[in-house]
Length: 117
Length: 106
Image (cartoon, chains in turn yellow, blue):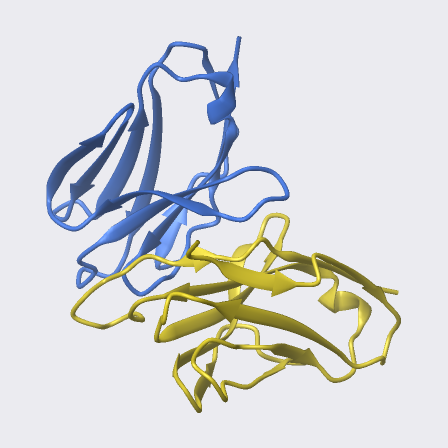
């Protein structure tokens, strides 16, 4: 089954304790992206990747890191989480990213609800 | 001006009615648009894509794109309580509106 898999689904942690949220897709998609979703603010892009070893900042990158060492994986790293990073996080992928000649929609993972105390 | 804008709602319609959800955009270069449905606490799922001016129908859903007026809309015919969700519009740059919450009451 074609899917984007995120783990964990729920995570409660304390300020400053490094954490990683994993994301993997099995559709051989070029483009992968991380979003956070907060009430009233919609989906805000954190980082995205057009291909292996190519990553770029989105709208709200502060406090986050990503890597794209393999095509299928795009982990999100919070080196020193803070309470303002409490949010619902989504990983997504698409066949091709924005500004390509073939405009493809995003496939989303099931989300990770992160609470930082 | 935000690149993709939606009224946050809620839009309340009775069961069986037509729900009309609208999205405006500022980038005239946008060629295609996507509508996603998101149930509370769940991930967005694609319900419609529209790549050219005009209407596109899929079951109870119709997407309409008007490039001259820079808006895209989603019509849901015979609305059901199970259609109650937030509907997100995005352009081909994968920029999202904040979503419109739809409530269908019995």
